[in-house]
Image (cartoon, rainbow, N blue to C red; front, side):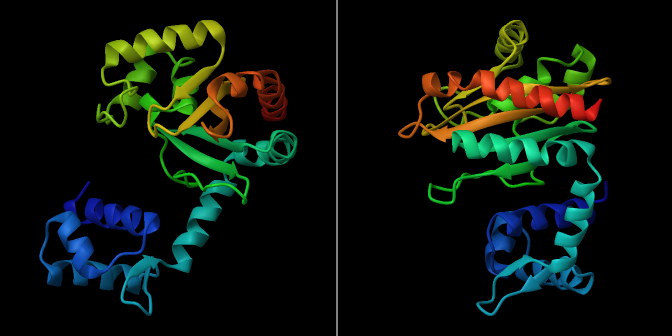
Length: 243
């Protein structure tokens, strides 16, 4: 991948998370402001970025259209749509669907309670496979060589004191996940958040995962575990829809 394309992708990821000024982006990417300004001008010209009235840059409409078209092409998102919303009406917790796309795990659907604190996750963004219930639920069902491909670019960074930071520890955790049939994120990325997830399968094997996520002060991990039968039932329904 060329350096300019890689940097453009990084800029788009950054302004999707939060609108930023030329100066902020130049500092983040370690380049001169004039160079960053030219990068942003190019992204504006192709309709991927837009300059807001306050001088910050944000993703433009054309990028949103392309992203929506890409997500609509994923059978998993379509198959899960109705079942996910029925589950959310029953439990009230945030529901995520993630798909294994090539060598990356990506959020493809999300329903959350508008009355509670919004979570960091965004549809279309990558899932951190080593410190998320979704990632572990998918990885546990993959052959070792396929798992190697997904984990090839992982940065074994410590986000909380519960984060798994080595491949050996992760493999041991995945063996347990495979045995019990579900995975947990016990404050491994954000200390105040916990999550449980189950795999979604098709005739091709594991293709994604379904999760329930909550702030610890709302539902702790033990409470989320009581909802695993509902989660499994919903994942089974989606799997049957996929065939």
